Image 1 (cartoon, rainbow, N blue to C red):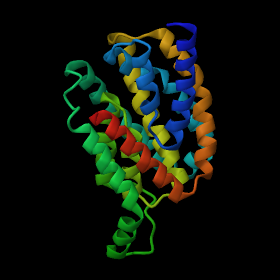
Image 2: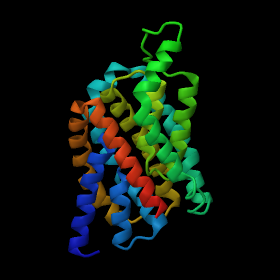
Image 3: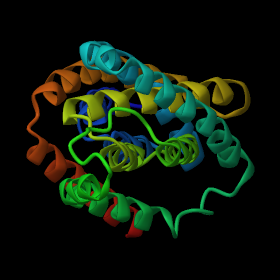
Image 4: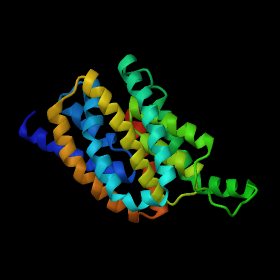
Length: 253
């Protein structure tokens, strides 16, 4: 890589870190940049996952107050996504890269739709429950299952996994947006850490690209958390939907 390409990857790491902890679409920025500087797709995907781990660490630190508010949910999200990501990382190494290319954009678009209509669905669910005024601050068995599946997807490919987790937590709980952002950040961190451990031993990695991404993303992740803590719910939903649609369109073209 040239000096300008080094700066491009470093900047992509910062931008991806911000996106990771605000709207959850870090790979929308960093993955194309790695391809543009000459990395093969599989190497770029694995290196991108490893390089964005620092964003999850700094973002989780930035959201530490929100995570303390719901420690049990945080642990469940952490464990389920970690378990799911093991299967996802194995799938990435065992299956051809294009296996899920046809279905992934539609999964992301579906998640965008669910995030967009989540307030109306949540109100309808509250009206149909026996205790309509009681808020759901825990995770139901169905929400846990979908959390595991999101972890599988995060370990396999990752692009749009944050949008999917926002949909899962938004529909499966009645938590505030800042708490959903915090839990989603922890979920993606868990998936990336597990995938990283596997990739370090069995995948081809570009350590220079990883180092540059990590240096940028550790700062961007914390900056994104500061933004995410103050983001109004309506703005959050609009940004998540827009980011998810852009990701899906890019993958379809």
